[in-house]
Image (cartoon, rainbow, N blue to C red; front, side):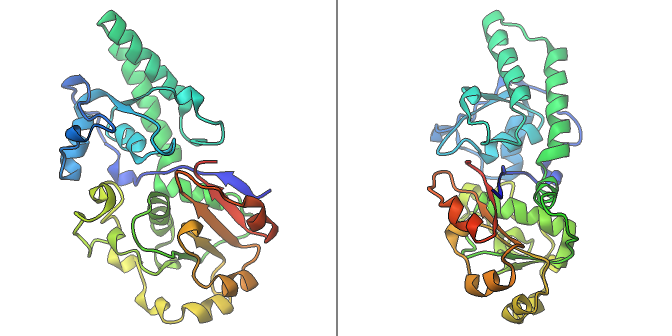
Length: 289
């Protein structure tokens, strides 16, 4: 069956270049405690993690969460209680073993009121290296492409809605970074581009996923010939960034791209009929598998 696990990812530009100085043991930002959600800018939010040795993260509606990636990217170790209960194919690409080592160090430090900083930075360095190698948006796009054996030069990335969807947005960013205008997003996802600076109305205030693409990465002219280009097989593959949130032109797409069609599922909670899509010859990547 052509069903693969997938996770969120983060733009490489969001990952620290130098390990920051630490001011406190544990971040005061607590998931679910809205009184601690006091950060209005991405920089202030990131700085909270940068100055902390550890930060709490946890399973919410789904196991995967952008917070996990933001904590690591800012040179902080997530304390992720109960991660050992995560299903094996969920958070499949996430460094669970390293997180468990961090959990052990955190709990030991609390118990003994002492922390081995050499051990801390060994774990942190390993997490940052793993993130660079596996969890950036371009690495996630490459992971998807690794499941195909034919050359891919042109990609169409379709969306039913343009409102924020973490998996759709960050994965599209990865393809754009790799392919530029040769990955065409239709319709254009406005909050991904520099020309759409307002983030107040976006989920999570747009932190980590908005205003991350040059406007030159979208070729408006391709919008005008979208149906014709699908029919003429201009694209090597077509990706639906969230098939739960709309599949424009599906009847035309499936008649031209049955075996070269990718469906992404980034939902926290869902009841996907995977077998239906696989029987139609499509390839699925599912976040909460």
